[in-house]
Length: 212
Image (cartoon, rainbow, N blue to C red; front, side, top):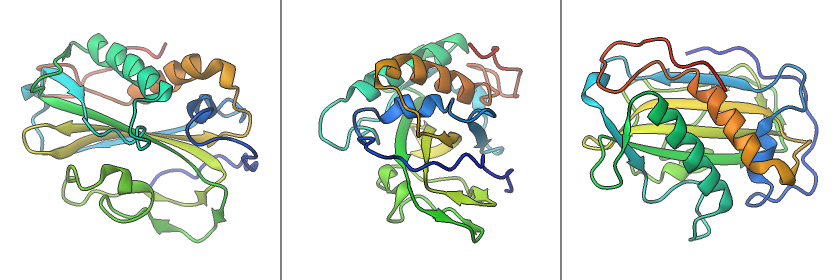
């Protein structure tokens, strides 16, 4: 699957802590064009069977062994977006599980190549083999820009332990403001979910709620 080139606002991330300022960077407002938002979903899945959601027990943003502020902000933002689409939050035995991960990279590689599949070492290792992608899954970029921040939001079929939807935001993370973490997270999660085309109990894609 081919996507447009990433924004050319390539500024090095100096002094950005991976766990702290973390997602303020993903306001991604440093570039005039804003973040690059992409998504994909498994078209063989009946999304009408899904009515409830919860969160992965081992989230990609909690590698330190405790729940970070970033995780708390992400949970709140995702819960608002899913609830707006008719899903009910169910901590025990939900139909869908949500996972997320954040990464900053400083290296730029110009040769086009596919991202490594889930389960391999590297960025997608945050999934840790917990769930599998659909057949033929794969994001492809024209350019890899490792000076940018990347936020992944995964939606997983809890029964099959399989990824069914993925949303990605990538953009310039050089002008992060740690004082604005929560607002930044709310904003970028809202942008990602404009690409989520389903509502609870409805099998066919519908127009999502407008971005906040």
